[in-house]
Length: 248
Ligand code: NAD
Image 1 (spheres, helix red, strand yellow):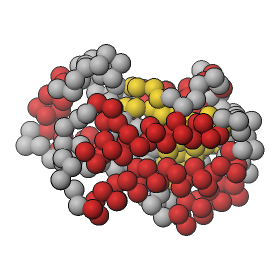
Image 2 (tube, protein in one colour):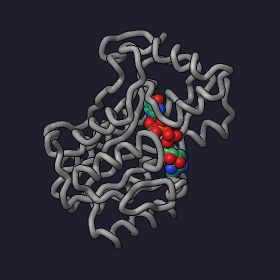
Image 3 (cartoon, protein in one colour):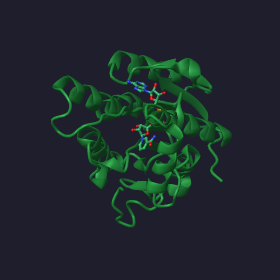
């Protein structure tokens, strides 16, 4: 059991899917959680703030809002992210820059704004949501994979930079997870139920990863139980990465 009593967390993208599960989990373990999202009204949070991680002014204002409300920040979960499909020629410059802006620069913006507060925390942790796409070599995911590879590199670099300040920085790398994001992809297929069954059958353990399983890994990495763990990623993917399986 992780105990975040008295601690304050920011979860980006916390209004949906994996971020919503992380928010529920951290709150259940005693944290006060501020969700930063484009859709803050959907968030079950102690504080829901309209933040676009592409827009530094909203990020800085959001962090100030958390300080005004709660007086501290101990945990930042950089989870907001968007997808993209296609090979390297499949996206325009604008699409490349938009996805990298959300998935990579967005994490840097929120971390940068929260760092002064994290430095004051006796139990500071950042957890970034990567993806198996970072390492698996998925077909037709060039831009998305590049963005998530950068998340792993950023995680390691930040872990080195802030080690001496007592701020641990880690990542979770989910496999295909049962969230509204994947639901939208399935719904666009001619037969969503058959598509879901086929997708489940392609996973190493025969089912999609649950958002709660990812939230469990985030809670562990954010907690003092992971006090000797920094600069790494936990793969929550049914064994896809650890067993060197090929995506089918
Ligand atoms: P989701 O679409 O259900 O939720 C994403 C949330 O991020 C939404 O609430 C959205 O409003 C918010 N968001 C998007 N752009 C934003 C921005 N510019 N500023 C602030 N908030 C923004 O997606 P999800 O499946 O829960 O994915 C969450 C994270 O997990 C993403 O980083 C994604 O890349 C990663 N991931 C998902 C899967 C999967 O299979 N679902 C697998 C691996 C990694």
